[in-house]
Length: 76
Image (cartoon, rainbow, N blue to C red; front, side, top):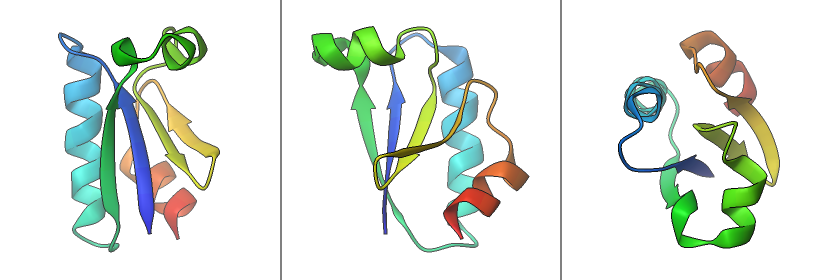
């Protein structure tokens, strides 16, 4: 399973969110594709106020303050 993690540099909430996502990854097998929203204008417009964003199969699992329980439930 592949999971997209949308973030940008110098974003403390993104660093914390990625840490939480990696904790979930210890219990559920999936690959994380990290996408910097500043490299694509359309993605930047879409997610600039929401980051970090976790997406699976084109559906947003969670954004903003990421938590273990919500991510786990969304990725099972």
